[in-house]
Length: 439
Ligand code: ADP
Ligand code: ASP
Ligand code: MG
Image (cartoon, rainbow, N blue to C red; front, side, top):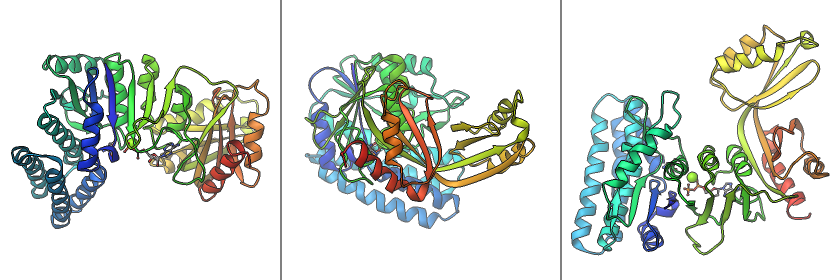
């Protein structure tokens, strides 16, 4: 059974929902994961923000606007009066529920519930439309099987068992519809897999059912070799190794959620990125295959902080590194890049919540320098150390950009540069020009 995930823009209007319905009907049995209609989760975040600020009027204004939009979607989506009435009923139920949060105490628990409504609405609307079209579809609730453990990591054993039970409820179903993004935590409370997390839902489901393929359908024809929102002349990459895709997703390629590749990689299930607007385009296949001798793509991750710890005591000292890294561990902050010299070490972090505490602790071991508003540029491809000239080409492309750190050799697939955030666009364009466009 295949798993197909459709993102926000793919279900962003009545017309798009109809087109997705066409794509998913017929053929083998499948599980379809849907995001909220585009813009909805942002509106739910805005509503929550008003409610945190104890401004129910502000929240109600956004709720009313969003509800009006949904009424229009319902009117355009369903063909018959009977189903239009069902559609209005669905919308009314969800929006009355969202409105109920404007009257009471609002905490992070309520926020998680509000944020979950987008995926609940889109899946309910789609399932109702499929039924109007006479398709034997079944809506399986993600909140009954998608769950994280006490470390906020997905619990694969629970997911597998409970998902199987849900599938068995509908032996006649031709296809299953479920919500991306939303889950329950270890205490049974409604939670989510972070923004953009529907991709993660799809790969967790794929791994749980040993799917033959996980398809991520979005609004572009696969992973491009650079960020198409920033760089001129990007092109789709037809094939990526799991590790290459994971590096690109982690280091900023928005098309994939950073954690989505991991479950597919462990279960060795190919992931295919496809375009809802152009369903016959080949897209990108992510698998265990490596294409030798090629630099594939570039991505950038912003909001990076670099920390340098310099100490003459580091020279020949055992345990200096351990002490430094223990400080990051104790502050629940993960380190991305690391560069060392005889007298110091530079690291980068993307979460500066505990920065002040980290700096205080590090000062016990040396002189600490912090650079904020930095950006990691990640070049991905067959970067095995014995290949000649690949890293040299990437470095040459960066010749006009001040580079604070370079990391190479940590894997066979990547070389990373740390630069100032303000140089990001120029660096991405220079890399594309040199590596892909022969300029
Ligand atoms: P969805 O709503 O379907 O999850 P996203 O907006 O999360 O879609 O991801 C698709 C978008 O990712 C594209 O429209 C594109 O602008 C952006 N993007 C950023 N980097 C890349 C890249 N390297 N390749 C393809 N798309 C990218
Ligand atoms: N709807 C959620 C978001 O906008 C999840 C997703 O689209 O993947 O972040
Ligand atoms: Mg996405």
